[in-house]
Length: 128
Image (cartoon, rainbow, N blue to C red; front, side, top):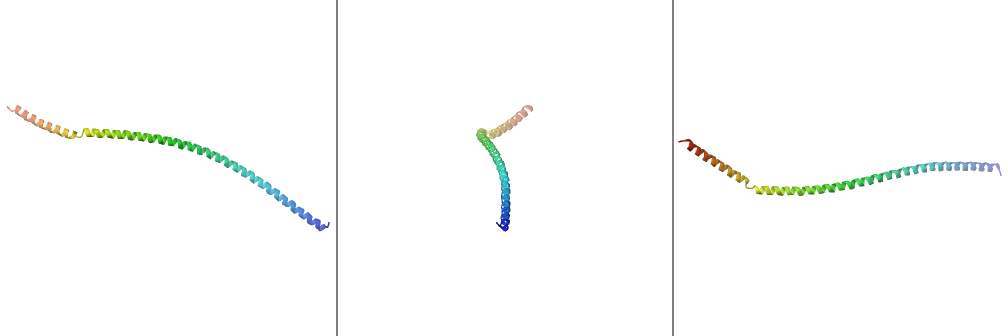
């Protein structure tokens, strides 16, 4: 083999070794990136699990609030019934006392009449 040929083979071997070194270096870098990506994915999975727990807690809270709202609706309905009963009783009381004003006016008039009659009688008794 000629020396030129050996020189070219040697250069090609050097290039090949350099390329293999670069490939190995890139593989190492990619493995490190892959490892970092796996850690990131693991962290994200933990975050998702935490969020799922939070969502479950929120769903329980919502269910509790719905129960509270249902209870409040029942309370409001009960209060409405009681207010309706009170309103009916007030209407009945007003109906019973509709003539009250007339009765008081009548009594005041009669009292005034009797006061006048008493005054007249006293005047007659007082004068001999």
